[in-house]
Every structure is written in structure tokens, then in C-alpha cells.
Image (cartoon, rainbow, N blue to C red; front, side, top):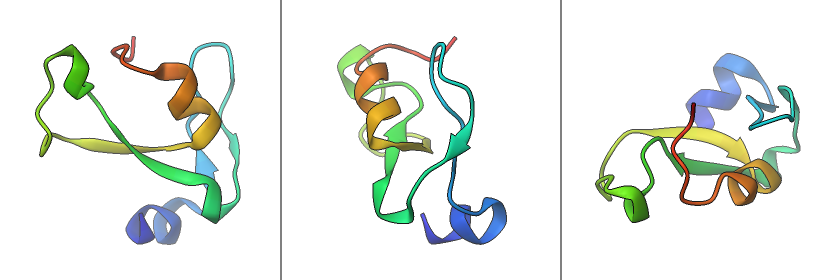
Length: 63
């Protein structure tokens, strides 16, 4: 998470209809690229999303 903020600032790439936007650092979460519930691995690749976008994504795979 710290590396993401150092490179990109407090930025969330968005999800679905929600465009990329600034998010408070305390609101950023790690998100599995392929959710564990959809067959992803617990130690699989992660991305950063704000809590709202991470919750909206749920167990779906990014388009």
C-alpha cells in the first residue's frame, strides 16, 4: 500500500461506472485481482482500491 501511495498518491482506479478518483489514504484497501471466491489464490496478485470500490467489486473479476 505504501508503494502505491508513493508512486500514485492517494488514488483509487475506480470500479464499474465509478471513474478513478482521489481517496483518503486510510480508505485504501488491498484487492485481489482475481477474488479468492472466484478461484483466485490468497497469495495472488493484489491491486489497490478504496473501500467503496472494493466493496462494489465484491467477488467479481475486473473487466
